[in-house]
Length: 497
Ligand code: NDP
Image (cartoon, rainbow, N blue to C red; front, side, top):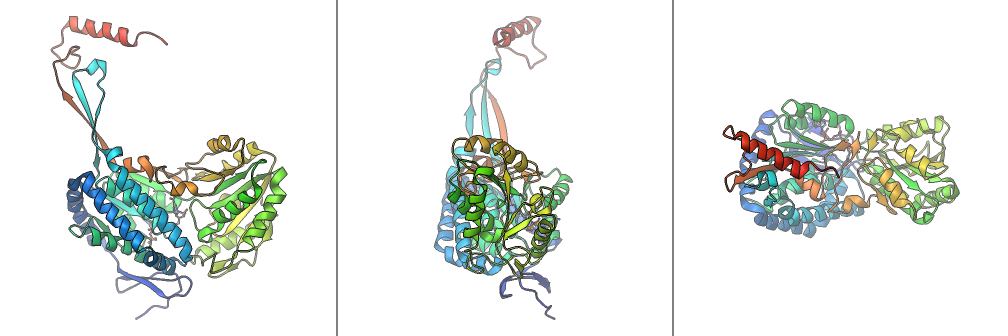
């Protein structure tokens, strides 16, 4: 029997997960739901595939990954169309998302050998007879758990790092976006048909929990803070290491010498791209008093021009509409004003752009992740006050600063993993920079050199080349030799700087 379907809400029918467009209800994808045995079997297959993949070496893996990157670029429109159907996001947004993912795949493939390749280390005087070797060995299998808001980019960050480092990957996509996840897996298999180096397992949250307990070498989780805690608890049972890329409540600071028009343009983009369903989306602005009025006017003018459908897609997860409505209502009830949108903005499945001012700092719209095309703008006396307010939340993912003379200094003081100066969200596209947060936004990094190192275990090897001159690590040392060690130590380290 076919269950009644609500657009955008995934259903499981006869062991098959069906995702639908949140805009039209059209079917987007059908995938089998994995049970415990299927998860175990996938991880077992991945273990063997990972050993084979690691054995190919950096150069051969790079070639395969670059071929996959080329396929992703060739079939960009197909991927964007599927992502548009499954998430509702405008095709242009899906293209921008895919471009960043392609960039990261390219970078990880090209730089893995430099960052993770074996190297000799310099010997130290006390163990001069030993040569040091450092290698970064893959974990074997990485479990990747992804969210629905950026179903291409968020999994591809950890996937490309993990593959470049020589691991196999088992991906658990969000139940809202299984078809995009499966598309990534299927296209990778076109390039690497020999072994299941990248697989997907599908289902609801319990399948993600099974993956955490499946014996994978590491879990790279992207999703909400609440689920991140569950993932960490499940992984703790077996001391499986985790990366947690969780939510945020990113702030933009507009300083007195900022280009107000550029700041407003970037604020609207940063807050409302992907209908605000962006972990690093700008949700709060702190504008200093001299530019506050001009900034608010510019934001309202620009956001007021956005069109539902073309610029602002539907909310991908229908349940999120209630959260956005609650935040707007709470802000208005507690003294805030809507200078655009407001109480009537939530019109399922869409939310119209909403700009709120005079919102108290303790209201949900300021403190909790809204994940809608909404923005609060707060007047502050100066950049110092802006920094204090921006840093007042447990989240610490990204942020932005607009200004000239002090912008970088302000950026350094934000308690976040990433900041864009004179733009918003730019750091996510820079393939050579690490991506990740602090506090409730999680820990660990994807992207860049740090992102590659997350997917490999540093292995230290020493090789003795000659007899010891200072034989400390043997019971056969003589009192005279111990005296020589004492002398050597004092000579080397006894002088105070
Ligand atoms: P969720 O935390 O609800 O889900 C994330 C993933 O975890 C999904 O695949 C989900 O499966 C799975 N999952 C659910 N329960 C468990 C469990 N007990 N054990 C293991 N896995 C589980 O997040 P959303 O999908 O709603 O994504 C939105 C959130 O993601 C926002 O908070 C956003 O800020 C954050 N995010 C963070 C990013 C970052 O890089 N820091 C980037 C993008 C988003 P299922 O969908 O089937 O429930």
